[in-house]
Amino acid sequence: QLFGKSYKECVCKISSDCELPRWHMHDFFHAFLIVFRILCGEWIETMWDCMEVAGQPMCLVVFLMVMVI
Image (cartoon, rainbow, N blue to C red; front, side, top):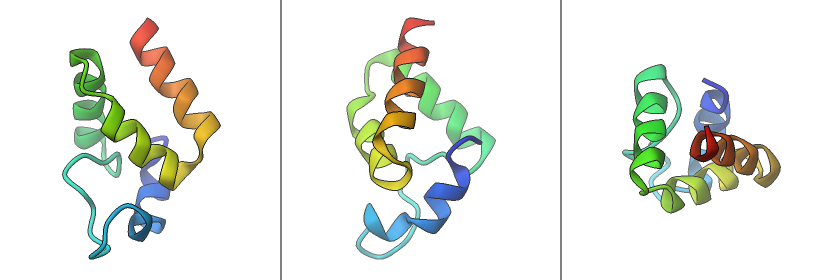
């Protein structure tokens, strides 16, 4: 839920048709799936999307914390 509002407001930066992509953090269920995807090693695409909509520093901190913890 940390990036949910950013995804809704800036979705046109990551999608040509301005619709939420399959992997987003707009609600709890999809954010939980992102964490699962990070833990499975498929993190780079979602990290770039997060950095586009919410800014680099915050996304890097969150993704690194999930990977380390």
